[in-house]
Length: 238
Image 1 (spheres, one colour):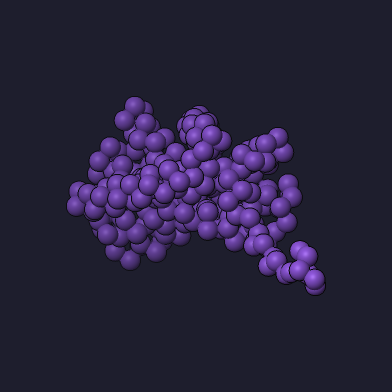
Image 2 (tube, rainbow, N blue to C red; image 1 turned 90 degrees about the vertical axis):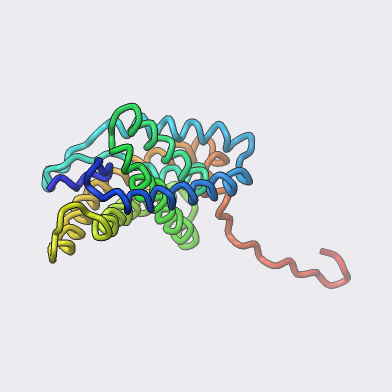
């Protein structure tokens, strides 16, 4: 059954479920636009364009997963979340998915809401939650940043793949019966291997940018450690 690809083709999920997720994706992207406008400044706006272009270019390069008989490519959720934040990052990945579906036929146009939900919304959100957690416990050194990028990217791919399992359970066109758990395990295993490649690409890219221009890494600017409270000194002098 050829459902290992994260880009869902037309006919895999029935029309009503696809329509529900299209509406959900549209509503969520509207929120991302409204929240992302608050983050946009003279650094983030051009960076968003560069991130979308980079993700689009790297997604064209597939690497084989021999043990699973499939190939994988960068999803980009964790990379976008680290460089431009979760709101703008979800928009960047969504733009890439729309162009791929309309121009290259990568994923069905009718399934676009499903693909955006999994890869742009669920994947980016899961990645940013992990990034926020890891950057609070790991040192903000190149090594700490690399570990954060690798782990968040790898696990976000697995989480995004399980979004497809839920969607297939709701409206899959082929009845799997009791094999749904097997589908979930197969998807998780294959995408864990794909996630390793995603993690390596994400870690290398983010660390390279951080070494040259750390001010362009949203995760380092937006997730600052909590400041210690200011205690006035004796005599009224601070």
